[in-house]
Image (tube, rainbow, N blue to C red; front, side, top):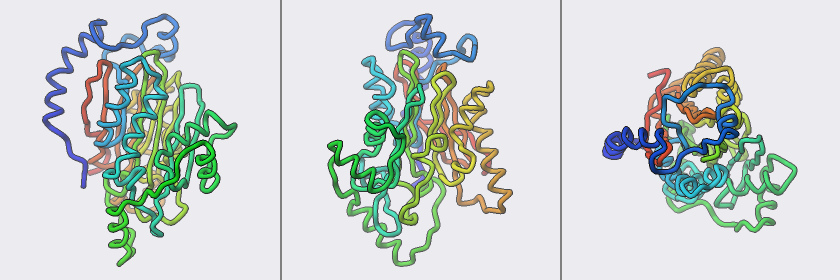
Length: 347
């Protein structure tokens, strides 16, 4: 089903955020960014001037981002690092069998196999990735192990599985009874007709900024439902599904991965922020470029969704999508969280 707002939560947030945000900016109560001179240089390298906004500390895609942000905030509020927070946040979604586009319980490929992709990246450009990984509950943690325990960035398929098992991860069946039943119903016709904002919202992408100004990002998915066995989308590709530059900002993508790959979407968003765009402006331009390339190829856009989230190094954030329906969770300094609808290009 299409993600929906929790209007009561939104109203609660709006009542509390004005006062809480003001108190935060004045340094009254709650967690706030380290204001050391060194951190001011690292968190605002572009000379963006005085803040006229409450900085964002966590962004994540779709409604399930609310619980991911809550877990990330539990790390940040204790002084934890952004890399730990972003991993902890997306692990919540990976382990939830009710979330049918990520991790355990994810919709399988057309051969009935749940295959997972994930990547993680920190402010210094350290990165790890796994693609076409099977039988492991938390691909994001395997990706972090690749980053920290190997000289490589990406491991794929059986090699990624062998590495995970060697590192102590447990092998298990990720195909739940519900997902298997859905796959068997699909097999009766075996027609691939993805629905915008359902099969195509196949990712949780998350960006986190901690109290020292460090940025980290994560992206994890079970991929498009009923895909060809072996298909890999944008989610584990550094520069496509995720990109982080601690001196500029971070971006992540969701939606039709092939279209994100064509424009190296997340890297493009970060480079546009480097040129001075706001987070939303950078996301909008990336969507415009993807749409223009799609049209030049003579393709039908009706069944396609693409969305980007971005956060600048100073905590300014934004999003943009090709079509309506892309929601994202945003947590501000102080822990106030809301679910927002991204602005969009096409009705």
